[in-house]
Amino acid sequence: MISKKIQNAINNQINKEIYSAYLYLAISADATSKGLKGAGTWFQVQYQEETGHAMKFYKYLLEQGAEVELEAIAKPKIGFKSLLEMFEATIKHERFITKSINGLMDLAVAEKDYATQILLQWYVSEQVEEEANDNEIIGMLKMAGNSTGSLLMIDKQLGKRGTKS
Ligand code: FEO
Image 1 (cartoon, rainbow, N blue to C red):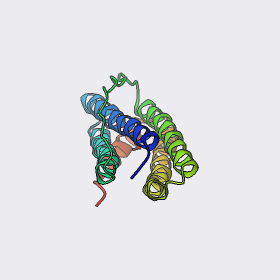
Image 2: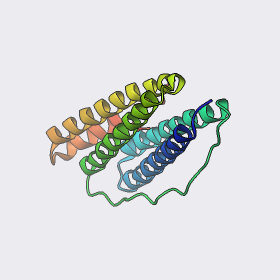
Image 3: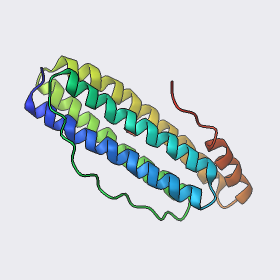
Image 4: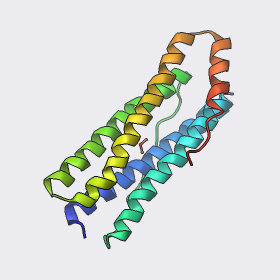
């Protein structure tokens, strides 16, 4: 049993996770159409992971006998000029999601909702991992600069990303 406040906050987070999936799907198409097939794959895997994040919350609400309320999804922005711009948009978005997860945790702590706190611990760790991955890629892209050869090598590397088991 969870409070209406927690239920609403989780429904709101489901919308943010689905928007994240939508955003990365849009970036995946943008990258692929620009000939960056590896990045296209990387963002498609990220799209799948975000869908998983939304579904984890969705299942939790149903397990708790709470109501799932799906809202409209905003249109994601595309048209990035470079791979670096794509990943800078990604880290900016992930920092926003981290803040949102932390806000949810603050609410669960204030409400003494222990079950939701346990669920959220997974998301807190996941955000650390996501931000670290993005920062690592941004670091490589900054080092590559305008070198086409290095950028193609990074793109090839990005294409090796597989889904988490
Ligand atoms: Fe679901 Fe990338 O945070």
